[in-house]
Structure formats: C-alpha cells, structure tokens
Image (cartoon, rainbow over all chains, first blue to last red; front, top):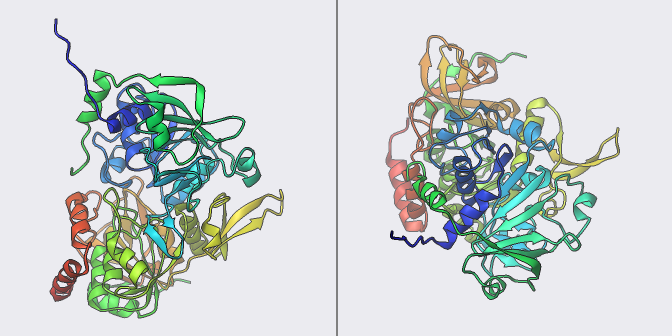
Length: 254
Length: 274
C-alpha cells in the first residue's frame, strides 16, 4: 500500500476552511471572489441545500461554473428566482431574513470593520478601491457575517482608513447603538487561521490556526497585538475530496 | 400624462437628440445588458461635462471618463468585476486626466433606493443603511430621517432623476414597447426616474410574446428606441449572447496607460456610428 502526500496552497486551505463555515440549508448573501468560490465549494460538498443569493438579484442560484462577476448569466440561468436590484436589497436583505453575509475586503481592523473604499485619505487617497457595492448593508443586515481574506500586515490593521462596512464599530454595544440588527462578523477566515470576536471586548482574537501555521506567523501578519484564544484549535487539513472539488471548479470564460 | 410614441431612430440621431453637454446621464444595466454601443456613440459625439450616474461604473464608464466625457461620477462600486481596477477612472481622480473628475459615492442599496425614489416621484428614499460607515461624511446626498411612527432614525438618500437614462433591452415591438429579461438590475427604476429615456434593443419584433419574469416598459415612457444588435457587448444579452469575459480581462491592459488607451479611443472614434 502506498500513501500519496496531499499538498495544498494557503489559498486552498482558506477556501476549504471558509466553505466548512457554511451549514446546509442556510441562506447566504455572497460577495464576489474568495467568498463566491468558498460558497460554491460548500454547496458541492456538505451543503447541497445552501441557498446562494447574489446582489445582482439571483436567489437560490446553482452555477455549475464559478461566475467572474456577481452578474454573470450563469447565475440567472440557474437561479430559482431573479429579482431586481432594489428588490434584492429592500425585500430580501434589509428585513434580516438572510442567515450569512459572506464578505471580503482590502482592509479589516481589530473590531472587524471592513474597508473597500480607499487606502489613505478619502480626498487624496494612496489607493482608490472599488467602493461599497452591497457590502455595507450585507454587513448590517445579515444575521451574521463571515469574512474571508488573506492575512497580511497591510490588510489586518489596528484601525481601517475608511469604514465601508461596519463590523463591531469601536467595541461592544456599538452595533446596537448604531441600529445594526445582525450580529456582525462572527468569524474571519484567512489563509493562516481563524479569528473571532472576543465576547467581552469584540476584538478579533486568534481561535484557530491552519495545519502547519504558527502563532508567530499569524502575529507577524496582524497590525494589532493579536490575542490568542486559550482554546486555540488547529484546522483540519483539506481532505482529498475537498481539494479535488475545489480544483475542479472553473471560472466562466476562464 | 402619456408622452408621444417613441421614435424608432438610428442611435446616432437618438444620442444627438437626447444627450446634451452638461447633462446628468445614467447608463444602467447591472453586469447584464450594459448599453455599450450607446456609450460609445456618446464618446464619438464628444459629449462633455456630463454627470455620469451608474451603480457599477465598469468598463463603459472607464471608457467615457478616459474619453473626457465626464465631469462628475455618481456611483456605488467602481471596478472591473473579477479583474481589478478601473485605470482610466483612477487616472482622472488622481491626476485629473483627461479631465478632473468629482465623485459622489453611495452603496448599492443607497443607489437603488435613490432610483426608486426618483421613479416614485418622491424627494428621497428611506432605508436601513450607512449607519456607522464613513460615507455620510463625504456624500451630501446621504442623511437621516426619523420615523414619525416609531421614532427610529433611518438613512435617507436623495432621489435620482437623470436628465437622460440609457438602457439596452432584448427587443421592442414596432410601437416602441420594450421587453427585457434575465437580470433586471435597476433599469425599470432608472428609466422611470429619468426626464428622457433612450433604449437600444437587439431587435424589433411584431409581437412581444410574454416571458416569465420579463419587464415591459411601455412606449409612452420612452423617447427613442434604436436597434443595435450586439449593443450590450462585451457584456451580455440573456438569450442572445454571452458575456465576453476575455474582453473584460483584456481591458485591464488596454486601459492601464494613456497611450494604449489613446489607441483604443482613436480606433473607436474612427469607427462608423451605429
């Protein structure tokens, strides 16, 4: 009997870990890019009844390839229902009927606030980013938010340059004070591990490391004094089926 | 108040009649049915100082901004979807090339509701949004309103009423009634919010056979219909052709520097009007 060494990239570990965070039967408002790949992976594996919702107005979409944009034709063709953009935000997102908002960003801070607007000053930015899109209201109104993004020192900052989407504001109680009805970010899944808000402080702390990653590595890519959970877990490595499915997913026109 | 039946006229004439220098112009289409051909005609006719309104100023507005059509951009997400940045938009914002560009930035929910208010004849819309974000500090069409029944404070956004809205649809009948389906975006709201509306279509048909989920825009809310097959490419027209994702990727290279973009612009301007 021979054993084959399974190898994977940090990005693949991140997508697999993110897919595992979604449960079967949930409804999920999906951002494009990393969240979209992970959500589609989940639907192909352990969550076949995951309801995928994209801001282009597709409800219950089941694309057999990954869309490049949030409005690719494959999303409409495979959807249970297609509604207008005002309807998707007003009737479906705003009342709080969607379980999970699945987001990414350019910067995130220790309270889970997300920046996708500018790096630097708003009026004369160092880098102009795409902007809000649907993210501010996804972050406000979904029952909970899961963030997927690569952990880099320039991205995991003590305080974001611009609050595009509110996480936990400046600490506990801020969401309620701001009238935000969803729970906000409950988990940030990176290519190094998993961060979750401390219930007492709302600050993101390290609760899991992916297999083979050290606390020092995670700390080196975090722009605040990263607290380590006393119950630090290790993420199970990607299974052969997870990797095979992930690698088999093609982007439309790719 | 019913308007006169829209004229089914060539695109060049429709743009010449309806889009004027300094106008507030919305070209809508959320990834799907983006009116590229109409945008290109606006570039060819060298319209200037436009306020360009669009939820997702992707390639078409990058092209119009690079061509010098725009003085102001009203938007909620400015990128090349799945590819990267809009280099012409960035150049205009950072270096004022070829013209300085002011921005008015919203979220998608905010923009969608601004069109809804405009279409509804209301001065503003109410939504749960923006609370705690930095956008209200920079965008003066975002404010708050207190609910008279519960006392709750909610976001208020100013209505959008473009001088002209331009959309692309699959087809129209000979009377100028327009039918579109697939991803519907905000086209219905953007047309009903506008003072004037121009619709380009893939084809004219004798009868608009009902289709599930289709939107029909009656002729009397539209000023002009122009027949432009392929007029949404490189975006797509559901049931007619697919999104050309390779073209979106190629734009990243074309738009990255002024010279390469200039070559693209010259070939567009030398091309014949539709």
